[in-house]
Length: 235
Length: 254
Image (cartoon, rainbow over all chains, first blue to last red; front, side, top):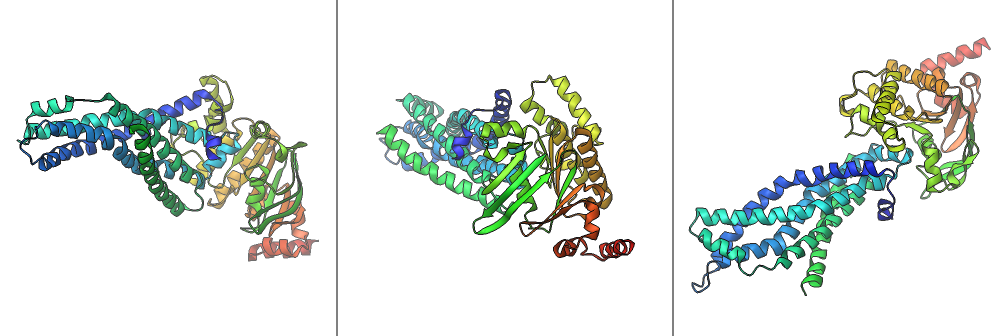
């Protein structure tokens, strides 16, 4: 029912356009730093762990680069980044809408004759579905750079071997698979969180609880849809 | 004029409004009074359509509001201004943006025209040089005044105020009351004010409706209150010693 209200015709397209730009900034651009930091360290750690697990001297060292690339594209930059964003963006959406609900700001919009669900939630969904795939790309690039730094600063593998591995038998399909998953996850994060915030009731304590529920449910849905999408797309 | 005919509203098994009928007159400040939890806010929110009533009719100048579809209701809502208990200003917007918001949404005015209107509304509620402040930087009284400025930005025909004086000191409360009264006369609005502040009743109450446990228990003018024999009304209005003294004096005079 809420989604029905959300996807109804906007009152004034110009205002929605402005709101989408502002949401891209608050949900997307403001999340770049956390994605960069986590991806950099995870890329570095995957490099070290892959080296640790390649014990056979017959296996070529460039496999480290291959593993880092595939792990990032197939799982980390979409699913793990989505779980991180569910925590950061999901709680922010839920608490923002919840606070607006209990301080009667949503009622104020309704009384003005504005479809509050559409005006508040649709720009968030559009902004996230548009911008989160960029975060996936950024995460993969920064993660690979993290691995490169390890190759450069340690004797685990040489930078040349690492770069060769990154380029070795690359399927662009892995990248599009990752982007497709992230678009679905973006929808899940924003819609589930918005639902919990929009229907929050009572006091600030309840807003906190709905925020927690939003994050937990978003994470569960992300993991469920990760399995479903992987099955559908990869097999 | 707003007419409420036989409206009832329940939440689960709890009946919050029970067969209420009342007419709120145009160009007058109509006050709804009653204890906390008596159903005043539910009545107000039912009239503006935030709650769907279970039974009855709500007529805005003979237009059956609660029977309308979303589009028709939207047209009426453009004629409504509402001041909420906590002012309900949008936290992420400045004072100027808050007041301009209805103009942005519903008019095709140029930026200059809108700014002029915003300045006029803010001046009208005696707020100047605060355009760029955020709601969190305002005092309770200022927030209420900005709320009134936003409510009048589209020249409303109907003005609703939910507990406009809650959390305000007596002097600021009198200023807010005076502002509501002035705006009612100036814009010739049908104004409905929810309150349990007896000062407001005596200051601006052209018509007073008393709600007791979801039932309309009494209605009349503010002067009628002093001579009323309604037990529930008397218990509510003359709960404190000062009010009791006023009642005794009024009876002596009569």
